[in-house]
Image 1 (cartoon, helix red, strand yellow):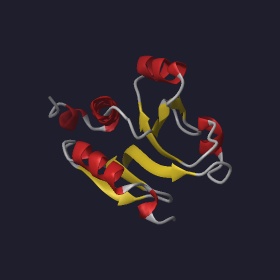
Image 2 (cartoon, rainbow, N blue to C red):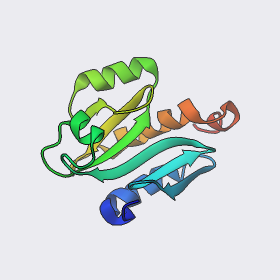
Image 3 (tube, rainbow, N blue to C red):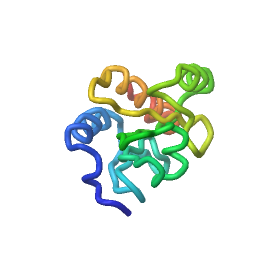
Image 4 (cartoon, rainbow, N blue to C red):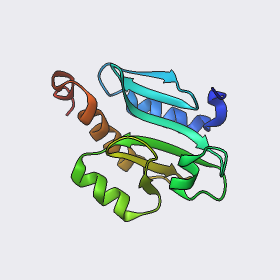
Amino acid sequence: MTDRADVPPEVLAALRGICAGLPESYEEPAWVGTRWRIRQRTVLHVFTAQPGSTGAFSRAAELTEPAVVMTFRAQAEEFDSLVGAGHPFFRAAWGTQVVGMIIEPDADWTEIKELLTESYRELAPAKLARLLP
């Protein structure tokens, strides 16, 4: 496991603010970086990927320099649109309908909130998903 400080504090703070609005979600250290879960399902995983050293993620994102990367779930239709759009989105190196996104300094946090809310809806029990506006 790497130091959770590998993700800039301002990015973690923004993600914590978003995930605080997702019923019963919780934060925990991941094998690298930090993840947020609902029950035993990962809604969001964020870490800093290093070119060549973070293996499949670095290749999938075509990294040439360190980058903050998050992964999340998307519905089938949205998955194809996001991955097809290209940078900052890419198909994650694992899982079904898992999207990777490079979080850049000028990231659209409104869009990120929408993406993470939809990721939560995909993974949360229906009873909890209905609690979202």
